Image (cartoon, rainbow, N blue to C red; front, side, top):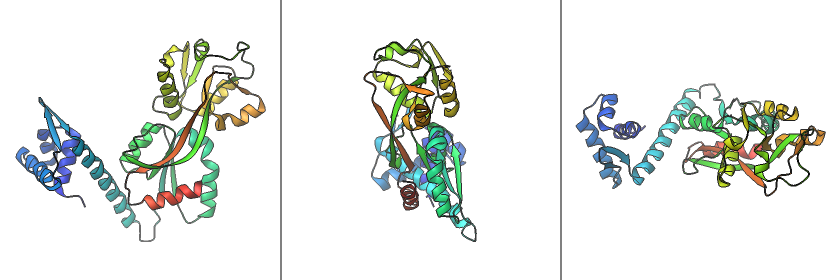
Length: 291
């Protein structure tokens, strides 16, 4: 159980204001200052700095904030575990990005379910940004993501490395040559919503070339990867997706790979969970079975 002074510290971190933290906690501002001073003495570290009238965390303070947040979240999960020991099984709460959940996870997950009929699972499909929020709040145990995540906040294992390719309908006509990215800007781009892994990956690549999605003549934003693939097959636009997702359509000939020069990208799909979680061994065993 966290010490009341560490709760004060986390409250100040949320507000970055001693007065507002005191108001939320129902204590005086001098008491808040005393709690922070105690922690600084205890850890031999300066936790906050003042820049003019603005309060900010020091590097040591940020490190302590992350560590205490993990401890708090693990404690909440541990309380749930203890409450459900008496004859109940706690479901393992798994999150996955839309693409992973629709195309990559179902078969290995089905093998796990058949091998462990005694276990309960809960699966949530969301974009990478939302999955990280659910992990941080303790509403998810682990997540399978394709988007960027701060490695200092999460432990992770790389599950797959997938090629990322540009595709279009087989009926779509391109010049009879290798294309540059600029040649595609006259096309309609079919794209996932902000916060999704595939959009983030494409945006990072375009940024490295001094471009962004606004360079395309038209962008259609769609929250479902299957719908994007169908629209691409119907020649409503081009898109970028993982080769494993497009494999069947490529083999059937309803999609073609766009002959884009100097475009050889691949991306990791990773299992992530809160750093230093006390349940890390359980999560790693789950990862190994799905691998």
